[in-house]
Each structure stands twice: as structure tokens, then as C-alpha cells.
Length: 132
Image (tube, rainbow, N blue to C red; front, top):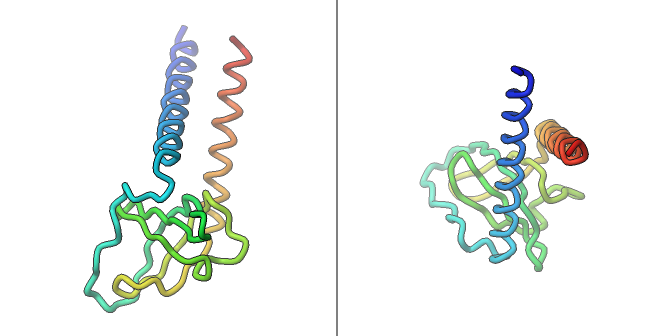
């Protein structure tokens, strides 16, 4: 009986995550320019700092949209600033001086970890849907 409750709890979490992803995707499809997201605020600091972000997608002109969750804003950056062969849905480290982007690096480890988690969730959802 106890194992059944755990399984139901796990499946309900999985369903909530999937619904959240579907909602987020549909929201982005309605506004492909991402104008609904807050913009980078000016930072008067001239110190070099690193922020962590997520390359959400590319715009039609080749610019990338990087979401900086920890600080709650987005950056639209030119393709030239992005690492070669970087794909959407990748995690990045962004070195900034004030509000100017200095460098962008792919965070391979975090990207790999999150892709594994995503694949695991997809597999669990598929197994659950096949068992019913």
C-alpha cells in the first residue's frame, strides 16, 4: 500500500512538471521575440562578474535569448558572442562588466545533467502511460 502512494506521488509530480513545460512552451510560441520577459537592468559596477543562464532559443535573425533566472531577466545576444555549435536549451556562464557581455561559455556539465534528468522524466512518463 505504501509503495502505491509513493508511486502516485511521483507520477503526480511528473505530470505537474510536464504541464509546466507545456505551458512554458505555449507561452513562448505566442511571443517568439520574448518581449514579455524583463530586460537586463543597468549595473553601474565595472567589476567583472559571472552570471549563469540558459540559452532558451534563437530568434529568426540568429540572436540568442539567454534567461538569467537567478537575477530575473533576459539578454538578447548576437550569434557572434555565443560559443560555436551551441544548441538551444544549453546552460551557459556569462562574464559581464557592468551591463556589457564580455564572454559566454557553455556549461557542459550542467547541460548534460539537465538533459539526463529530462530524458529520465520522459522515460518515466512513457512507462507510466504504457502501464495504463
